[in-house]
Image (cartoon, rainbow, N blue to C red):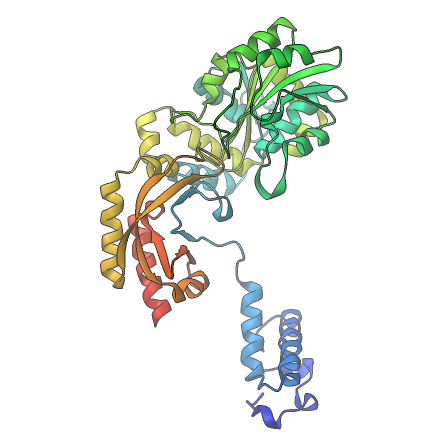
Length: 441
């Protein structure tokens, strides 16, 4: 119905009406409201092109494309070829198969989310992960909310609202997207009391700052940066001694947090053993699970958090809890967790395996193998460099690869596009090869 016209012959009055375009045969089977919206969008863009002296092309085809875009998913699976394992912009930790299976099983129907099957009465959603978290961390109790910033805010709101929280000046960090620890603290209703200096803080600084209004000692792990040189920070055991002397709770914000030994990244279990009363950490960073904020520690303090009105607003949903339970279950067997939790597997994968994958990819696409350096990401282990190998291809492919299905995201460097193979599985490397071929074609 709508013909392609040469731009020189086109005037605005020659464009069809919205109703006419919506009746194009390529839109005839579509719901009328969607067809009209697609036609309206296509015509709006066509008018701008006509004004600029360009041919708007086949408007029926363009309207059909607009409708397809409206129907397509915005949140999509992507191939991470950046070498950054916990890549915040790419969704942080990919989930283990066990976590996905639990989420699918729970999400496909009803569940006992808040139903006690034994008594036949109301239950608590927290019970589904509390027992395994107690076992893995040695805590008396546990609670899960929707992210670690929420966990810290809930802890401070429940324990220090209207009172002072002592924090070292060297720990007033900024986390992702401009969120800062002082801002999170302020939203909790607590008041910030800074102690020490940026580079040197001692336990005696906390001791001198404690007063009648002090409610909590807060330690914040410097997860996404390091201060080096003339520095000093008190050990957690020292802070615990000060806190016990004044009968104050010590809250340790680990940021990422781990459940296994991983270089100088502190674990929740070690933090509790050192004397922290509450420990907060993330579910979707080095733990390798879904987005969640996990709080473990003293039972009486966790109960205060659970009963705070803010807890309901911040609580985790059933799919999060299911995926988290599936992830935590792997940690009951550390060797299995190392094999099946993708983040742990990528961290520990032998370099020769990464190189072999890069060589296969380079052979498939006619690229070159280059040595690279990967990163942990997610604000964890900022100084750690992960030796890696990448397949380099022409940088002009970057945009086309991002537009593909699935999108492939690499790193532009010195006129080349690097596809780092530490963050690709063997199967994903094959997909990347096919994507490169399609982008070139």
